[in-house]
Amino acid sequence: MQRDLDRNNLGDEEDWYGNNIAFACPVCNKVFIVSAHMRGGERTCPKCAKSRGIVSGGKDSGGAATVLWSE
Image 1 (cartoon, rainbow, N blue to C red):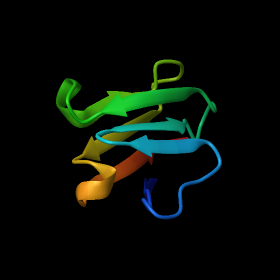
Image 2: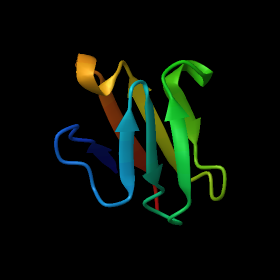
Image 3: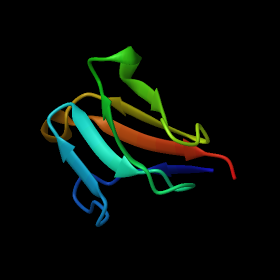
Image 4: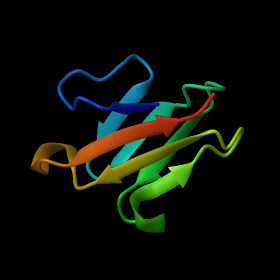
């Protein structure tokens, strides 16, 4: 499954500051941070490894953020 984050309408457990985004894994609810400057802008959930966050660019500069997961 995939969900693109809306920079103007973030969920209760999401935050986007500059080139970094924090969100809760849709599978296990572990909150983790993904940085556009580290690991190529991608990071797998450190708890269950069933989701992956991807961020490119900054929130205020037209960047994009996506969450991918399998159940």
